[in-house]
Structure formats: C-alpha cells, structure tokens
Length: 199
Figure 1 (cartoon, rainbow, N blue to C red):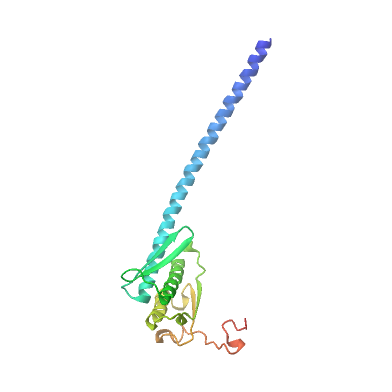
Figure 2: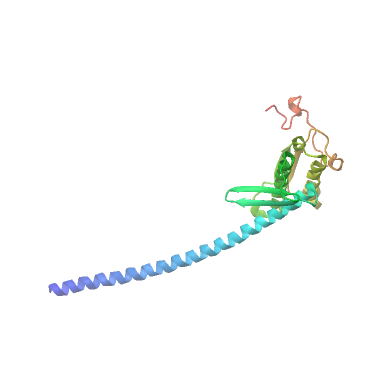
C-alpha cells in the first residue's frame, strides 16, 4: 500500500511536470514569435529612420546651396544624441558667419522635413531674430529669404508653416512688401515690440 501510494504520488508529480513542460513550451513559442515580431518592427523602424535622415540631409544640402551657392556641400552627422550640420567648400570651412548659416539652413531643412514627412513632428513655426547681425554677407542673408520663398512654393499665403524673421534693416527687395512684410517694430515703445509688451 505504501509503495502504491508512493507510485501514485510520483505519477501525479510526473503528470504535473509534463503539463508544466507543455505550458512552458507554449509560452516559449509565444515569446519567440513576439521577439520575431519586435525584431521585424525594429528593422522597419531602423529603415524608416535611415530614410528620414537621408531625406533631411538632402534637404539641408539643398537649402545650404540655396544660401551659399552650388559650390558648397551640406551634410548632417548623427551620432548618438548629437547632431552636427556641416558645410564644406573645397574642404571644411569654419567662420562665425558659416556657423550661423549652417544652423539657419538646418532650421529651414527641419521645417521642410516637417512639411514633407508627418513623422518629423515639427511644429512648423520658426522665428529667427535678426540673423543679419551675425556678420552674414548680404548675399547669404538674401539667400535665407530665397530659400524660405522656395519652401513656400506654390502654397502662397496658404503655406503649411509660419516663418518669422526679424530684421534691423530692410529685408531684400523681393520680400520687402506684402504679403511677406507683416509688421514693423519699434523697440522704443512697449506696444511697438514684437509681442507688444515689455518683457
């Protein structure tokens, strides 16, 4: 009787172990399929991410050439959390004006990507405060407005973005009037300031 009870106990333990093994086998299969699905999603996201980076780099290159001429090459380096726009003219160049220019081009390229790709999540609003004061040559300064006009394209006043540039001197003649000239400011009085108040 003791041997029978022991055998019965071992049989029940064996049956439970078999049931647990079958259940765990099913869970492993489910987890394996889940892992494959996640791997496929990660591959698709990586591919899409690369495509967006390539698209953004092409836009930056285009805007940089619009501002500085066709002799320059624009590129954007992405490494971890750092982003570095570069403009080259027969090799790397570095000056105060070029630093400002590359970030202006970067900002315009970001707006353009926000229009072209909904996944970019750009608010499509940008303000540049007196970029001319950063030692920009008149040609480069005019190229900024030309690039913005090109981005505006055929949208006209229905363009899906808002770009504000404040200036301390008249903007280029091509945009010095309606519908581009929207507001003349006067910093000497509170109501004449950009937001209409004294910050």
